[in-house]
Length: 423
Image (cartoon, rainbow, N blue to C red; front, side):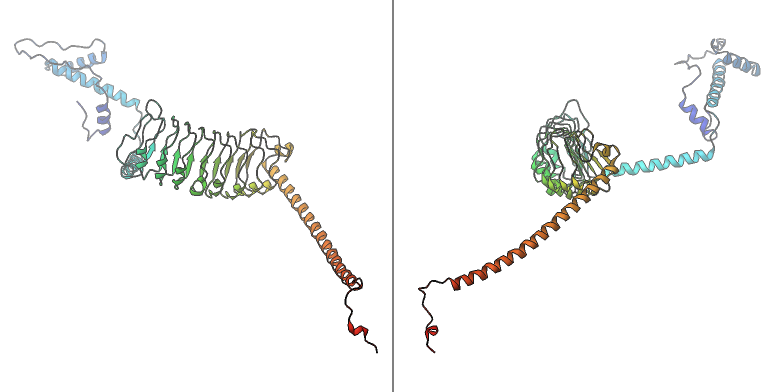
């Protein structure tokens, strides 16, 4: 006795999804013997409402003697009553405008998801996730490979077959047991993001410099002691370089050629300094050199050329003085120099914040420039006086030498016959 879906759509929808609340019919009814007297309908003992409904039907329809029909009508009335009770618990019927808005929103969501699905199925540039994976190669044999899910154990090597994915843009091989990267990684010239963090890498292949499209490179939490010498000359599009948690002692000077670099994280290494050309990183905004401990003691004077620097962490090092040009970091808004034996600037200035530090270092820089100018003027004056005396002395020496030669010439020299003539 289901309601008409056209007349009662909501009721039909709810009842279609609710289990039957009435007693289930028997699996197979026995044949009705017309010669036998009709059996009285079975009445559920635990449902008084059904009993009252059946009694009401018997009173209203005294000629209805078919037990199956009577039981069916009783169950239908009971189901309708319970369905109405369930509908009452759902609350009042929502406003039709709200329903229309919800339908429109669902349609928009469906359209958006359909568009994303279409783009996903047609794009030819996969994102390859090899993190925490034990497979020895990509499961897909086509260039349309998507993501390799982590399996049971950890991978020890990235197979060369992956390097055949010439359009690959992102490769995530983090949290594995990799001890080296294949030299063929340089073939991924469209690779933009490479994450090989949390492995056992001791060196990076020089061929990684050929991945000229790299924007992000994460080699953190490995056993690296150095970076490829020419890494900065070719990775000119790199914006984020993460080398923290390694054993790197120096940053190659080629890194100073990464004109697009915005973030450099080198904390928790063994750095003993920075290359002199560090100031050429004009777009650098975030620099973390913290926790290099006793190895990092000073910064180059070109540090002040990092005019776009916004965040700087120098904590847990052995820096005694900030560079004299530090006051030129006009855009610096966040500075951490905790756990350093700083003398310049003094501790009380550091406690006042980054603006106080910049002001102190700027005044100090002006004083240094003024002192250098004064020394230069003194040297110029001394040089001018020394030059006049030198020229005078030289002229006198030349004159005396000429007179001496004339007066002190030897007597045996030939005499001029003109002087011996008699007048």
